[in-house]
Every structure is written in structure tokens, then in C-alpha cells.
Length: 421
Image: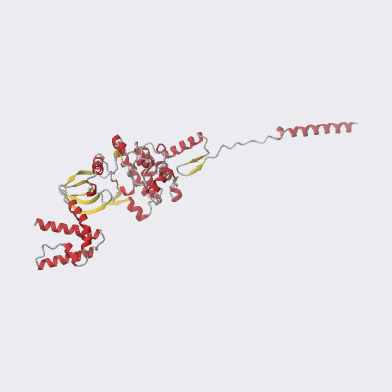
């Protein structure tokens, strides 16, 4: 009985893998399944597997199956986490594979992230994997994907988290090109609320981007993937990471690129601003031929104002984004709470006063330094030098007037005397 169940489970894994790798269609695999079932009913083919049927029917080759074996074994191991029934793969990245699973004890759906075998012997990757679980566990907030468990099953490290049924902001950008201002503001406001909670708890996310922001079917936003999260107070980790750029090139802050040791919450504010920019313009803030070129632009290139790309944007949106993305972090929002105040004000239809105060201070600073050009966050403005108006003297104040007047007076006296004589 147990052997039969194991065979069925393995057939399920194989069928899914063959389709995922593009070696066959779902229809072709289903035909082979039906053929296997029909044949087994008439003869003793209990030992025959779906793989054998797929090969004999010409759907896949032996060589293709050989190449799949390591992946199949990984899938097989992934499905042996005590207390959970793996249902399907949700996605895979460079650092982990995520599965949809049922937690048997509570009969609820969860997401399980599993560290790939190739990283098992890398202590740094394993520690970062567990650090993600610990960080997420300390952040209990409605707008942050919740952590449920982290552990090891056999040779595999796993992290169980809340399952969010929905889509990512990145998915919506791909589908719609860009968000409406109202929808983008709603998503960014909820994400900023999540970041405020994390920052107050002493954590910086360090990888805020469209792919890490989930939107549920009820339009609730969930900040995901704490894989790069780090406690601000963790000096040892900061020193180990000094000089290394952790983050995603399209959204990474300048100080992260430089590998500075004292990266803080303002790095998340920059990345959130870059995400906001992408959402309302349909374009990343800086693009390039490779990650290095993109990061160089984050450091050196002037940002094209978002309302220059999307003229329909209100000036407030542009102001907030550009303050978030100031290259000098001291010119960004002082904290996430200040950013939230501006976002909430705009949601009420009011101007972002915190951002405008930043503009005013920047303008004043530039004038004090003797500069005549000041780049405002909303638009590049030119501060004209003071205009000195020289008033023309009145007629009575001009010397020629008096010369003419005296001459006229003498002529008048001569005329009077001539008439008298």
C-alpha cells in the first residue's frame, strides 16, 4: 500500500516536472497516464512507471529523463516535510523554491520556501535563510507576510510562511504597463506602513521592489521576502557585508551600492521611491546594458522627473518620489513616519508638506552657497539672480535741465530789457 502511494506521488512529481520543463504538454502527459491505467487493469504492470510509458510513447527520451533526475530527486525530498502536504510549486528563484502546501494540523494553506541543495554546504546562505525566518517572525503586521515556522527536514532547510493568494506589483506592471495614480498611492501607502513597523522594530528590508510586494484579491498589500533583512544594530553582519552591494540593481540605494557599513532605513525609502516611480511611469528609474551600468546611474545620473514621463501625474507624486530617491540620504525623508504623513495627505487630496519643506530647505541652502541653479524634486527649477532695478532720475534731477533752464532765464531777461528800452 505504502509502495503504491509512493509510486503515485512520484508519478505526480514526474508529470509536473516534465510539463514545467516544457518537454511535454499536459494533454500528452494525461494520455500517458490513461494508457498506464488502462494497461495495468488488464495485465500485471504494477512495476511499470509513468516515466516508462512517457518514453515508450515517444513523449520524452531517456536522455531527457536522465537530465531531470536531479530535479526529480530534489522535488521528491522537498515533499517530505513532516506535518505538511506539498501541493504544487509556486515559483523558484536563485535563492529558494516556494511551494504551496497544506498544514495538516490546522488544515490551512501555507507557503513553504526551501533552500536548494546546492546551497546546503554554504554556511552563509544557510544562516541568511534562517535569519529571514527570525526577522519575519519578529514582525507581526497585517501588511507583512507572516512567518510560521523554520527548520530542517532531512537534508533540507525550510521556512513556512503565510500563503498570500494574489499577485505581485510586478505582475500588474507587466500586464497594465503602469498603475493609475490612485491605485499606486494605495499600494505604496500600505507598503510604507509595513516598512514603518519593520523600522520601528529595528529591521531594514534592503530589497523593496515590485516582485516583493503582494496584492491580495481583497486589495490588501503584503510585503514579502525578508531574505536580505537585517537588524540595524547588527554591527557584526554590517562589517562582514561592508563593500558588497546587497539588493536589486533597478531599485537599490546609492549607499547599498557603495557597500557602506551604516546602511539604515533610508535605503528602504529610496527603494520604495524607485518602486513608486516604476509603478506610475511604467519605467524603471535607471536602465542600462547590465547591472553594473544601472547601479552606476543610481550613483551619478540625474533622475528624470516622473511627471516628465507621465504628464498626467500630480505634482505631489513627483515631489514625494524625488525626495525618496535623493542620492544624498540626508535629503530624503527623515523617517518612514514622515513619508507616511505625506502619503496620507495626498490620499486626502492635500499637498505633501514634508516633501515641500525639503524642497524649500534645498533651495535656501543653494542660495546660501551662491548657486543660481537648484534642482527641485518635482521639477528642475532655475532660481534667477536678484534683479537690480535702477530708476531713471526725474527731469529735475538731471544737470542738463538746469543748464537749459538758466539759459532760458537769461534770454527772457534780455528780451524784457530790450522791450523796455
